Image 1: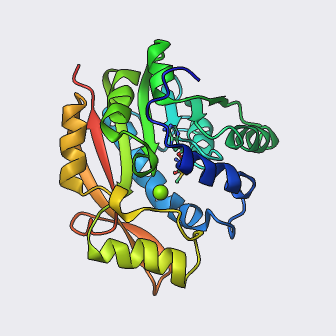
Image 2 (image 1 turned 135 degrees about the horizontal axis):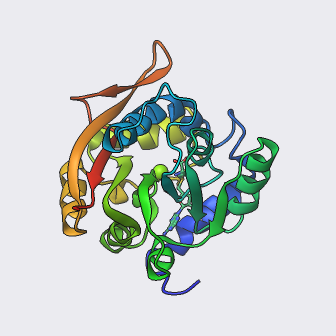
Length: 247
Ligand SMILES: C[S@@+](CC[C@H](N)C(=O)[O-])C[C@H]1O[C@@H](n2cnc3c(N)ncnc32)[C@H](O)[C@@H]1O
Ligand SMILES: [Mg+2]
């Protein structure tokens, strides 16, 4: 892989070790499986509004080229392909790629999965209408270089959704003590609290990368209903943003 400046080898090693579990809803990626309906609701609505698509149509994203960067096993690539998009899924952890490919093939989906990075794709001149950048930025070596490569991957007027975890005492309690040590949803050491990013810091990084941040919402877990929902106000732990590449 050329010019892979955003790779943190210790982070990639963690994901290589978990690759076989991507599609086990009760495995190590259980939190992402639980979060999927809520985040898909957000992502599909943002894309539909920006590109004037009707989500009640059978393949509303037909003709859109979408990159799922840090795609893991393809938990988001697959629904985008089902909606008709032309999807590239890219991940720096090599073992994720065959896992994602085999699963998509079994579903009868055509997705272009690649073992590569955002910076290598950008350098190769790849361009997309939308980039899904979900739960990756807190795992990269250089967030600004990474987001700049993501900016370069967008066509003018293109849209990126970017989610991560806030950095404060509550997110330490919930995302690290709660998710890793008490619930054991994630292996211990999955997340480093110091790499979490506040929404204001992320907006600033997105702007420095040349993007216009236009929206942010919280992903809030309700332990009573055992469901995630979107929140306008509570971005205290998990949250998502939308930004546009100026036309
Ligand atoms: C928490 S997972 C999120 C997977 C997927 N985006 C989702 O939300 O279902 C983070 C993924 O980012 C990948 N990753 C980490 N650093 C990366 C980098 N510098 N470039 C590309 N992918 C990276 C990891 O291998 C892992 O698959
Ligand atoms: Mg994460």
